[in-house]
Image (cartoon, rainbow, N blue to C red):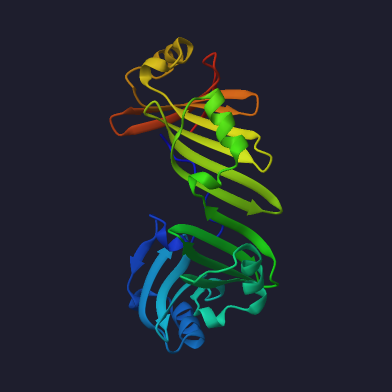
Length: 271
């Protein structure tokens, strides 16, 4: 089953599979000079090219840095590792308002244009806590991994009464723009389930893994008529509000297509 976990706000682009490694000697002079002027003491420099931008990983004073420069050498984004002592007090104040005792595992400062953000991560009793805070000390997002006992009772009660006993694999709390949400992942009768709730324990979305034998005939007929010769590789049933959908992944040799269908077999979206 596809695991739909919200992406982190500031995922760095160097992991993009379309980026191409390049040697420094092949970097345009205007870009290389701009980098050397900004970071004359950089070591362990690694260059990649992606969609016309230059992505550089390097170290300064034994601290990791990630930088994106455009084709003219202008800074698009700078991601810098920080020591705990370098984190501004305004940022620490926000963290302390959520967590009384902690030990910083990772702290990073991200600069995009005139905007500055801080990513702070640490563990408490083996559970992750992640903060995104802007340069003015305003909380953008806070996420934390939950113990089973920390999941609100109305959520676990609703799941059990409507869907059955859930063997919980993962649970996460998220706070963003003063809105609270929960993500719960687990298994019911050996089938994967993903649940998304708001802060009032209202179910927002539910994804359930399906066996091929559980796919409605209407869906199977559409697939046979429109995608003859394709094999069903994955099937999910999705509830979102009062709407229900089917997410079907098909494959034929090296070709892959994903369909979103209504319960009556109407194709709503092709990916």
